[in-house]
Length: 370
Ligand SMILES: Cc1cc2nc3c(=O)[nH]c(=O)nc-3n(C[C@H](O)[C@H](O)[C@H](O)COP(=O)(O)OP(=O)(O)OC[C@H]3O[C@@H](n4cnc5c(N)ncnc54)[C@H](O)[C@@H]3O)c2cc1C
Image 1 (cartoon, rainbow, N blue to C red):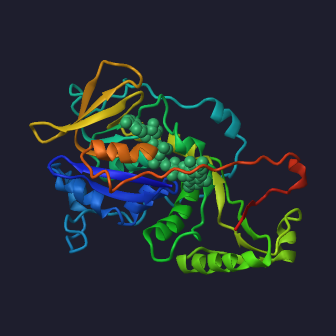
Image 2 (cartoon, rainbow, N blue to C red):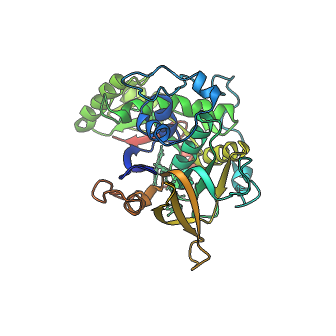
Image 3 (cartoon, protein in one colour):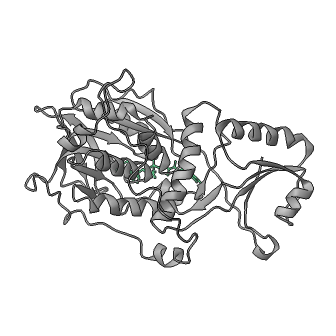
């Protein structure tokens, strides 16, 4: 699934579109962390925003690769703590008490009278929008920011309804950004969950060739994974499969110990709490972005309305707007002045099956056919 993030610079004629497979928070997070989101950073810096002295002091020297001299962390704040308990028994209760944010009551400290004026507006409160918001707030200590989400809670769409898999990175073509960010993101996602005491389990996964004909795919995924830097991959024969999971039969399988599961809704909610705790950001729920226009002073006005209502409409203005609208990414990109043909969402349907007798399968690892 592809999510497009469109970065619109108030003074630039056309938005910059970054197309990225959203593979967990880590897409935004590790792209930023690993300097792959230079475009965003440059766009942000290209706008007339004052870099606070502290950040300016620690900024890198300008280079051809980094003309803005932006400071990029090798390690994100809070990383590297002691791992805590894994898949805690808190999943149920926490799911029940789903988190909600009111639209007011968390006004930014900076310029409190201009409540709808921000440095950055992010459209979309899924994991991509929230990870982007979190990262921007960390990198730019004086920036104010609004996340505009049309639903009444964050992570209401794909993020809150996905399979919760932390992919290890063997599916992507070696040398691509996807391959790199997936492997790096895998490690960062485990760290994030452990540091914030969110349920996470490194359960591993078996990708099973049910017949000899399918075995070349297992080998291909193994070679691809090794090239991508995925750790611990093993090809198992049918006996090896039985040892890992007695109730799975197959000709061969790729065993990936670093594939795991987490709850992306809880991850996004946790990020949302970090975002609001900054005191410089608001998450505006039930705010659907309808339209984007440039104001006379070179800002972007995003016209918002409560979904399903004819009004009242109001404008949230920002120097930069980033759209992270998931399945609506192409539509929003077009509304924001982007070229419709550049971003197109292709949807596909998946099916989930439930095993009736859970006891017949040990079920520690995830299993899937090649
Ligand atoms: C069935 C399924 C299973 C998946 N399984 C996995 C998996 O196991 N592992 C994995 O890594 N990935 C998985 N994915 C992919 C992953 O869930 C998505 O890539 C990811 O959640 C995308 O996040 P997002 O923030 O871009 O989009 P979303 O979570 O869809 O968020 C977009 C947000 O934008 C808001 N929005 C849209 N338009 C507007 C507007 N005009 N104004 C205001 N707000 C707006 C929406 O309300 C929504 O909240 C799966 C996806 C699906 C569909």
